[in-house]
Length: 463
Image (cartoon, rainbow, N blue to C red; front, top):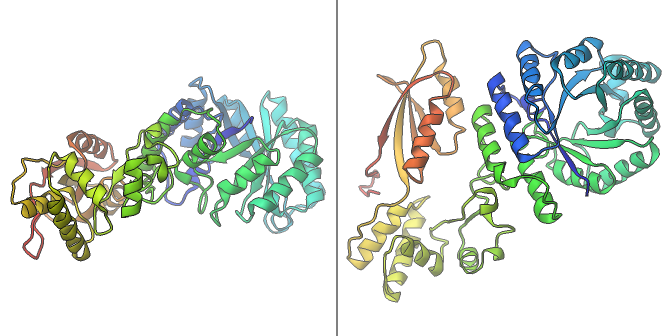
């Protein structure tokens, strides 16, 4: 399979509502993407702003293995800027659907063809490779789409991007459309740009590859205009595990995902496939029993492949094997009767409390066995007090902090500090890393960390 992956985090990804990257962040993201081995990096449209121009130029100068692209409308000044940036390829974008031609650009089909040909020939004359993107292609009348694509190819484009701009395709329909277009137009490489408005972007992309296209556009963490495009991690792991395509360096997937989460302030949902907190967490008795006996019973692949760890959640749904595994982890020995009572108490407590932490389980074991355990749980709770620069809105910093994986709640407060963040990490190394990351957040002046020794509930219980 000659699959290629184009990452457009720096272009479509930055079009995500409320997401903006600095120049340095864009350069770092490009480097991380290159470590994974993506084939192409769409670095942005240099006509949008001076900083985007600067970032594209810096990325193009890095001599990365990936092909670097700049995006442009069908306008000569934009193509000139792409050339100035030193990119390998320029994307010439022009709408082809009737609704876009008539209500957005006010052009006839003949005028559109003339514009497409003129600007692609101009880009080729500058020595640039060209990809033509017919915007809103899936809603474009087929005969005109063929005409536009062939005009672009004759003008010098060597790639066509089939854009499902509204994310309205279904895999079986998209397969037929891609195959028909691929079989009808002049020989050319074909990209797929699928939006996720109905949650079908990756499924559509994979169907399109099966139909003869050879490149899927993705964003880290599924960023992108509106609801985004296929997620980089989901796309790579789907092909790595399901299609046995071991082309990309999957050990760097979490590294780029976590970096983009911090830089974008765009929170990864806990139930997100591959990168979400719950992706390798197991809770019910049936599941935990199976996965502890053989991980393949409930895991499609070993989490360590991408630097993740398996998590066993102990609460009222938990079975005997999971509780015993947790106790053994802390070297707490119990007999069968004590284990039965511990499980019973866990279910009782679980009915009254949302979450059971390791400290709760140790406390229950001590109560049941009447033996004190000299155990320090791995989990660390802490309060981080934060002072914000005078010229920065506190709410802006809070919005960013809420998206950090280990920050459970954030409060704006009065007094010496402006913000209090409650965190939960596994160990001191994670705590130190989080603190260092917080100090890089724009607007944070100082931090003061307080480790929680014991937490007391309103009912008098402690943990």
